[in-house]
Length: 102
Image (spheres, rainbow, N blue to C red):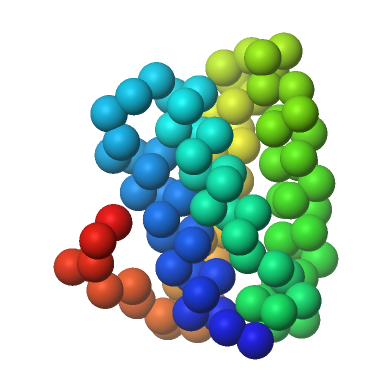
């Protein structure tokens, strides 16, 4: 298990959502790609796996149907990604090095 890897990837997704100068849909697509690198069975403790797997199901729906989704649905997905990152950070008191390349 590598909670630090999961935290790192979710942090990268959050920074991508907030900081990459491009259209929101493009930023969300990049953020989703970061989140998809996390494997719940490998990278997350058991108590977060079900919630994360539900997030992945929602992400896959967004990814398959992004052109058909309205901005509100996409913004809600971005909020869920941020919320998962915050949950991990609060629960495990794991602080990403803010001086990293992100």
